[in-house]
Image 1 (cartoon, one colour):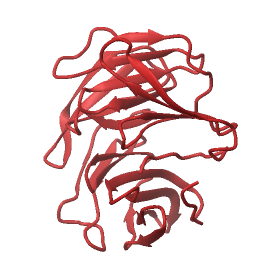
Image 2 (cartoon, one colour):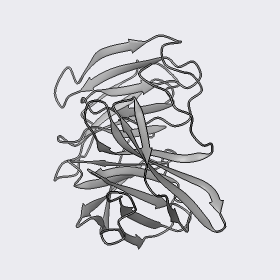
Image 3 (cartoon, rainbow, N blue to C red):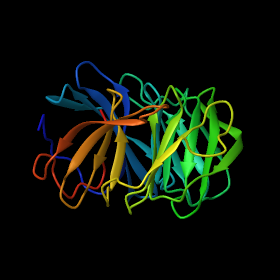
Length: 254
């Protein structure tokens, strides 16, 4: 383990929004717990896994339940209950109100949200349906036009290669599907699998281009690289029980 920290409890999302030197990152914590009617959002800088420093907290008036990095130094938060979204980040010490953007779309039941296509688009996935939606990310905020495609129904979805628009969808029965959504919407998946390990709880794209699979129940993990042509994927590493901590609720990549 590279480092460990004592943090406050009850965070709803943890999002790495900026890569720093070495393995460092600027990470934003957001909570459903309130201070009066406000929901705390905190920016913490982790310097190469050794030290940390916190900027001035910001507060949202709504319990935004999804978060993703949209560009270096900026995150996006979405509230399913109201359809409200906020995009922004911190300056040297405090939330940058001058560059923050916000808006409201229809309420939704999205279970994951992630940026892809070199941060040109933001995707929204509903695990209980066969739809994947996307909106353009432009001028520091979300575009009003939403498009969708029909995909395989799965429990988890994430961008596994941003430059190539590769999106992986995983079902807890070991099935997986790889899609590529560029300028033109795909009509079907590139390839599919039925042999993935069951019950992965988190799938996270790492800053080195690999994708981490993590299982909460025992901490077992593995890394894979996905490509847009055969053989489509290549295993890179594996983590036996005890190497990664078990029972982790939130996983993000520095």
